[in-house]
Amino acid sequence: MADQLYPDTKVTQRITFSQRVREITQCFVSTSDVLRMLSSSESVALLLHLTIFTFDLTFTIYVLLQLLNLDGKFYEHKMREVLQIAWLFYHTIKIVLLVEPCYRTQEKVSSTRLLVARIMCYVTSEGDPLGDEIDDFVKQLALNNLSYSAMGICTIGRPVISTIIGSVTTILVFLYQL
Image 1 (spheres, rainbow, N blue to C red):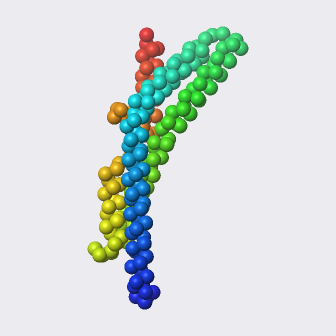
Image 2: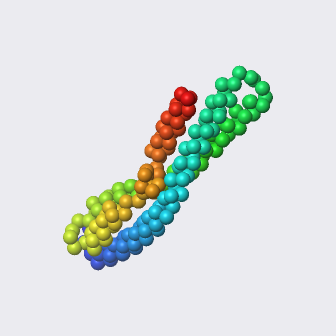
Image 3: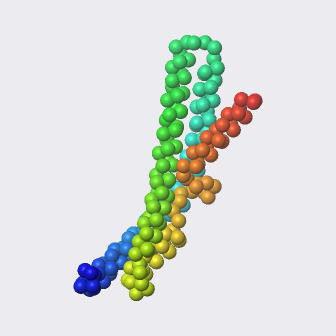
């Protein structure tokens, strides 16, 4: 009823909202460009970090397993075991700090897609100024699929942690078979 009494107010609100959506779309495109440039410029460094982490974790676990296999119960061995466990935690925290921001970025883009899709449900006519802006935002979300990659070899996200754990396990099995 209030919409029928004040139709100009509703149109003005739609226009204002569509202008805000246009601004958000422009910010998203700019942010996507920056993140894409960052990912491409740092992809070699990401690959090196992942490789070094894999080897550090492998050697730390290997040394820890060697220390645990020693028969002597000397104080010196216990301190080395504690040190290796501390290194294990350090390497684990290091990889989480590398992977988690990348994963969170991808999650935020996914939740943004969901929110924009929900807003699309409120566009009721073709003449609605909000319709064009939401349509542009949907296209930008589709075109700017944000992900971080290590030289195109793997996408940096939570699944890469399980891949690294699998490779560390494989290397350790190989080392123990020697």
